[in-house]
Image 1 (tube, rainbow, N blue to C red):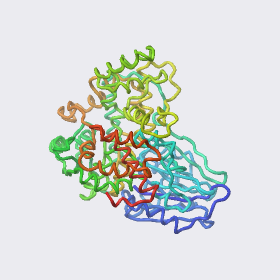
Image 2: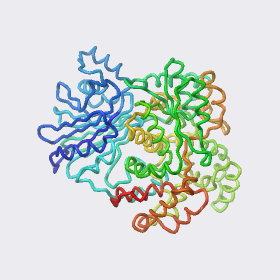
Image 3: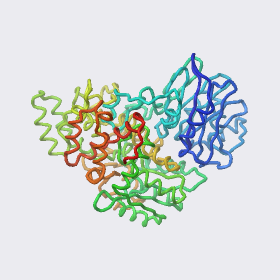
Image 4: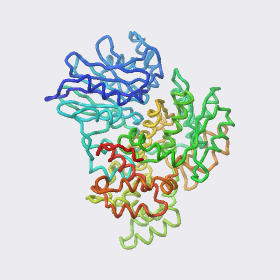
Length: 623
């Protein structure tokens, strides 16, 4: 795992690469790659590529930038899990390798297949590859979006990096707020791609290839995960067996490492499944957990200890509280770059820090399991509310509110959620951040032309679908298009890399996603049970007391922390200079004073501290 950055002249008006600027960009990413660094600048100074290395595979021979015998050069962040198979094919075709790294496979594969080579890669990655023969530079992000890549164009130059802070180190890039994205940020807890909260800075979307040459910059989608809205009926028994077999193969691929591998263990189904499958292989392993004091609540360490004891792992844990959370806020804002307004970023940092302290450089995590197998309680609530959702669609506007209120009380969903679920006659997807964000925005933002805009639209290809099937596919499109790649995967990327360790997600093998994506709800969820295929497939491998335990969810007790410590910081950020340009300060103060609103206030606090640090250029030493 690494950090990459670069400057490429594209089109008219580009300036020559300044090695000092490129070096400065590169070294903002030292936390992503403390084990080595390198820079390539071509003789014409039209292309500059930089790299920081975290050594995981081929510790001695994987230095970058890596240059082929034909002069192609690559900087690469991530892992190519199928590189041993690709290497064998390339060697059979006459390729000769100087290293044992997956990076070198990229060069040989490109030289044989051209830009289409990216379609053969299975892994998590972001890279830039320059071909001196064509003058083109290729940038790509993996199909699911596990690894980030940000870019901007300034004065005829393409400027890019693994994190936004690398771009901001270039003198041509000045930070400014993308005001049109504040509303979508509040809805999603992150800015949906390809936008960011920085004006003029974009994310490369998952499964996207960018080509930069004398004609300029253009992008193309080489992979869509998942591929199509095609419903398939599969028996629960078949789904369970096949899915766990695919998960086991994915896990095996993600053990590729020349350094120790551990597991982030919550004690829930997903992380316990990884431990169980590793134990089946006879592997020794370390497990890591984070928790909170009894006063804060939400602590799963007892369950994690029980799982660790059952499988005989070397188990480590850490407890954090409001003081730890407040003390980390300056670093939190620094490593996020743009707000990733999920408080789970804090415990993720501390559990990854614990793993690094114990000498583990690679950790396996359960990210993606809830999206692939349908594990969210929100989904079940919406299914229970489905009769009301369908009824509301046929009622006059005047009758919708009382029906929504009554249904919401019965199933535990807010009336606003049920009402918005039939907006425009099409039920929205099943994650509450959408509805809560839109509801809050309607009175908080000082300038919002469309308070219901969320920065995402479902596919128009929904012909012939029942309303429940449409709800399922729309939900999955949102999860895999916005929430998973730009929120959940970026939070673990940022805070594993902040501690110079690599996180891998076995549940996110594209083949496994495709297999489960088209299956009906019969193998995923009922109003009472979630992750049906996964739970059925794990019977006998994972103890029943894990599989049958109600899902708790990995969170952070921000309501308690707001009461104890964070409230003063919110008041410090709630000023005309910081928040007054974008928000109704009276509405914010009203929101802050409502009991139990910590989770709703957290995105505003994140935005305020981000604005102070990155837009106003202020030190956060008052924290």
